[in-house]
Length: 253
Ligand SMILES: Nc1ncnc2c1ncn2[C@@H]1O[C@H](COP(=O)(O)OP(=O)(O)OP(=O)(O)O)[C@@H](O)[C@H]1O
Image 1: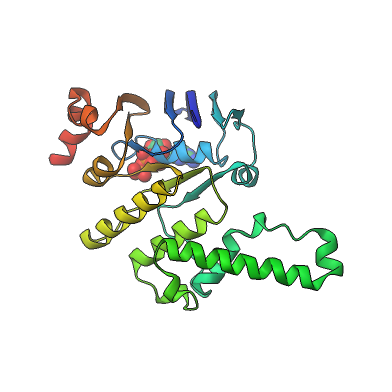
Image 2: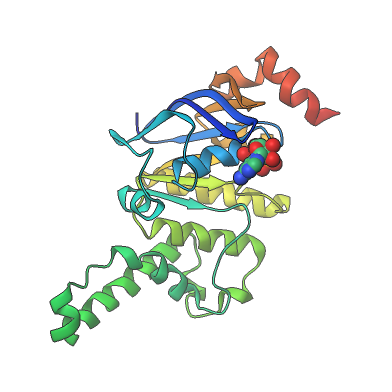
């Protein structure tokens, strides 16, 4: 298993947001975490990325406990994320946005920086070429030199994907990737995510849009009031009575 979320509880003061939550994300494929508003999904992502500390339980990524690792170190170990609210640098070009994403991973070397402008330039050139390649993965390479501000909402989301992939993550976390998108944008984004999966990346997403989750994920875990109530394939989840009552039922109301 690539990521093990083991018996995690999280309290905010007296509020118990997660209670003994356990699920395992396999390597390869797309894993989804769904659940009603306030179920605790974002808290799960914040724990995985080191922004929050669990009250009890442990999180193992790629064989190592990451429960007390700082956020930037977790990125280095191979977890990248996108956010619910799009965070691109609007006054920078698309290419610059992606190069910034890979910055921590560029190995200039101290000597290289100080003594050898040539090798510095070479690394910069390679970074730009790699960024252009990542932009081509989400079919935005033709806009590489444009400002991110000129992109549509759906395109900005794709730019975020390219930037997250710039760190060469073993696991890509997507926090409600289709929030606020129209049906056409959703369909296109679905294709992009399948593309990323087919390039061998492991993906873990939180999403509200049931059709999107059911259509994309290989496995799904359902969180309700801070507890996992089901885990399985999309078909198993669709037909689980507790899930229907807790989540799908509410959606239909
Ligand atoms: N830093 C915090 N301090 C106190 N309470 C918090 C904090 N972060 C989250 N909560 C509470 O924890 C609960 C779960 O929040 P969380 O954002 O994880 O849910 P969610 O499933 O992601 O919801 P949504 O789908 O609306 O984003 C909510 O009741 C929220 O108010």
